Image (cartoon, rainbow, N blue to C red; front, side, top):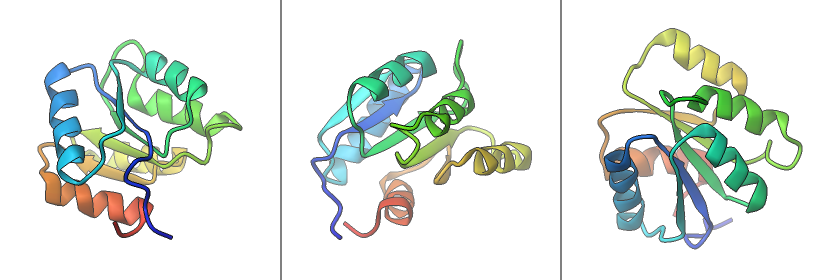
Length: 128
């Protein structure tokens, strides 16, 4: 099945510059239907209001972290099937293991480029 480049994607980061970078990388890859949230709680609210084909979330945010957001998404019957990619500045093994146990689909370590993002998206969504 082909990936729908028009599917809505939610990007979550408390750092506006990072939101802009991820949005631009997604645009380079052909995804233009991108919404933003600046923390986990806002992201959860948006995800419950609209059906997203993918959530890309930063790990380190206040007051709700990306990890807590992931656990909330996986615990919600409406959202639990949503593909989820975690972005982090640290590649701590403990974090990777915790995220995997919580049901993350993939993991990106900052800094990253369009090629890395595409590789992760293909791994989660399939070729596009």
